[in-house]
Image (cartoon, rainbow, N blue to C red; front, side, top):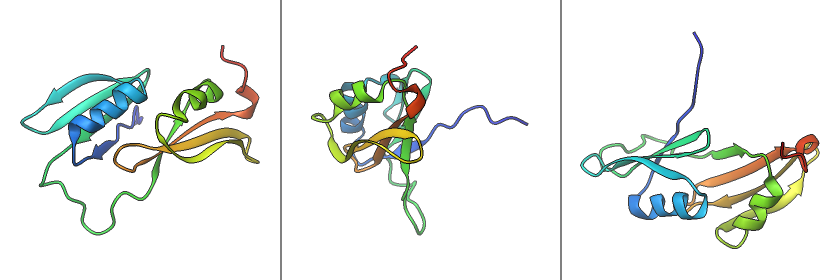
Length: 125
């Protein structure tokens, strides 16, 4: 058995605002939407995210406490684009674990981290 993809579903209180953030700020494309289900699907390159705004899917106990980590091929260019468009969690930095990365928050407060291995920085082939 092989796992072939992970497609997180992010819960939101305003699906239109969240679609707007991911399409206008991050460049995702809306590939599916069902207003009756209050659900949407977004895609950018090989990354897919689903959104849900409904009252019956509430987490029991602990809520989402992690972050979404995106591997990108030009982290410096993305930083220059996003640093004034989204609320910054931490600025771009090269870490001791050989990753150059930064983090911002989406409109719901989800932490979005973007990183590139140091040996690939400057190499966008």
